Picture 1 (cartoon, helix red, strand yellow):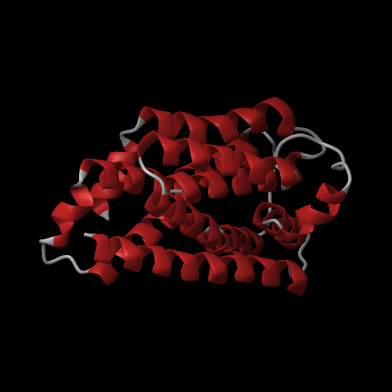
Picture 2 (spheres, one colour):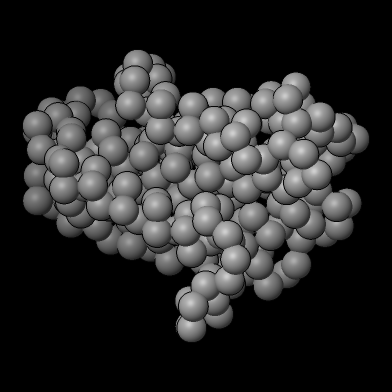
Length: 229
């Protein structure tokens, strides 16, 4: 896991896409009266992107190059590898979320009680789990650049429908659909914590549902991948 995280952090594209982009968007559009909600939105942006790319991007490349077959003959067990990739996906959100938080405090003038900061950070960390699982699923299903493109398309789709980028209501059924999108529900939960309230049970249930379904899909795909090797 240390090796995978160090490899990802050496990737300039990762740092640009998942750290500099949300921080830059916050500094460009998030300051002023809406500094706190913008901070939550960009933290969720970083969490979704970090989870998807952190867990899935390297897997697709490793499958294409045969690295997973090499790991098969090492003492590293399947369960250890799988758990490590999931944890890696969650941990990879930390640089982006930390960057947005620092920008919000220093440039946006956001100040919250310590307990509220802790609750908000814990929510974003736990809420990144479904994105890490979705990224891993794509990495185990697609290969190479196809997987990377699929992850990026999925990320921007979730960000747009979830209201992290863009503004206003969505046309037609998309407006109703966004209430079942993990980016939207995680952001709404973050807004609740920001206001000192407990996140709604419905939104948390949506996040839990995405996590369970994605976890089952990952296990099924991983077993097929293991048998194929």
